[in-house]
Amino acid sequence: MPLTSAVADDATISDIHALTLTGPIDAGTDLSGVVVVGDYLVLGADEGHRIQVLSRCDTPSCWSLERSGALAKQDQETDIEAITYADGFLYVAGSHSARRRLVRDDLSARRNRDRLLDVRQDESRNRIYRVPFDSQSGKLGRATSIDLSKRLRKDPLLHLFYGVPSKENGIDIEGLAYRDGRLAIGFRGPVLRDNFVPVMSLDFDRPKKYRLNFVRLAGQGIRDLVAVSNGYLVLSGPVNDAPGPYRLWWWDGIDQVPGKDREVVDAVVLGDVSTAGGAKAEGLALVDEGDDLADVIVI
Image: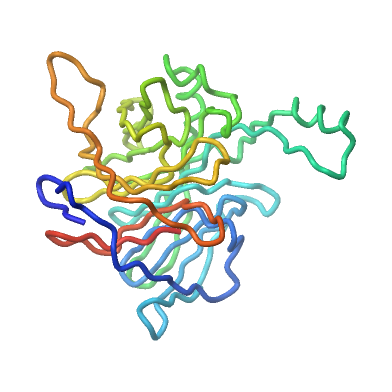
């Protein structure tokens, strides 16, 4: 897909092939965060609490688990949703979301009604982690973290959605990218009227001084995003549990709120991302970038 100063109308997704991941991967059917750092592939799962470092196998399409590190205690779900890397650090995003308990076919209708009324907000999900990472050896350092829940509760817009279950258009952080010293934090929800999706921009060390930008993705939310030379590649999908479609976009990274005093460049859809067997597209990683092509991994 073209990544020159403008994205061409005939941008396409092509040359799609599967990767093989080997080893005892934690929560391997719920992988949601991914980043490539040199010869390492780093993974996280939304049902797990570990970041996992894989190294290349003998073939280019194979990666093997080498080591992992816990972000929380064994009984805590950190809800890892996205991973990015910059300047010797991995950044790992938890969803900061609330969840409504699922109904079960083996329970009575009365008990299922009680479950529908049970909305939980787990503090272990409310973290953005920074983890030292040696890109030569693959070794992980000790994680530090920030909690964005206070910022979300006080924000003039986002506080309206805080505490609303994530699959019901509540707060749900699922994208994370890094550019020019700042994190771009993409939201799966909420998606606002006129299809505006928030992207929070902040310095990890100064989270109070954040800014909200907005991008429009035809009614979908952000599943992940990565920085490229002229903006971002954005993976999108439904806010709720709908089966898709999932799409890849190019966005210049500039706030898309329109006005008579500014010109807005629309995000460009590059194509649908097909998923085998009903799998959900959850994470996006940039492998390589040239003048005319980007090589990415979708999990």
